[in-house]
Image (tube, rainbow, N blue to C red; front, top):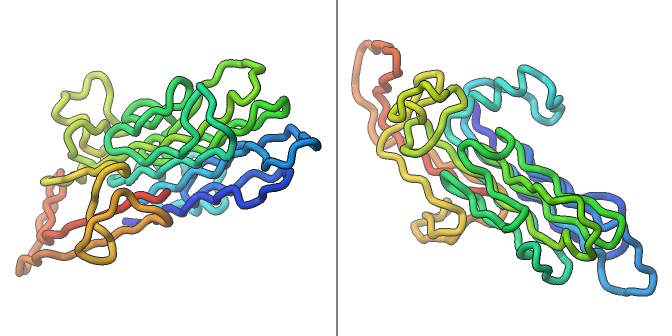
Length: 272
């Protein structure tokens, strides 16, 4: 198994005119959109977007995503091999509020991430790109630049119409959804319409988890550092694995759905 810890998306730190997007959070957060409209008579910062965060996950197949080729069959198989995914949050926008969505970046979700309506949507179990947050939209006619979306089981995404409206892209990015093999309501990459409902969440490898709990990034969750609680996680992703009990056995029998003799707890927090 391989643990991929998601990275925090870059904030919009450059308050001058720029054509360089904010950098995505490691593990496929979306880049921030750019406001290419250079209004020399206005001292306000450009209305661009911050970057989406990268998801944290545990997967069965390794791939060096630092040199990713999105058309690579091996990359896609690595993404499909994830058995636990914590969705990440989207990046905000530095412009003035517009009726086409909120400026703030939205948190990573549980089974479904929250929409920033009407045109920016959180990832779900079946909507959004598998494992990848959509880049923010760039414009050159004073529409602004949207925040990048967070990655997750499926990343946040946008479907704006082709409108030349000032400020239409003053919108924050949405977050990605989460996934746990065996968790009620999840949909495995290998599931089809013919898969029985009670089996749709189970990963194609057969590895599954029981007694699971999934908490959205907008809700209270245990802190990864101590016994307190936090509302979502700001910064890079974390994963805490605690071995609760090891059964003393001399032999181990491997069944179709992988019965483990180690009882362990996995706690993963979102990146934002």
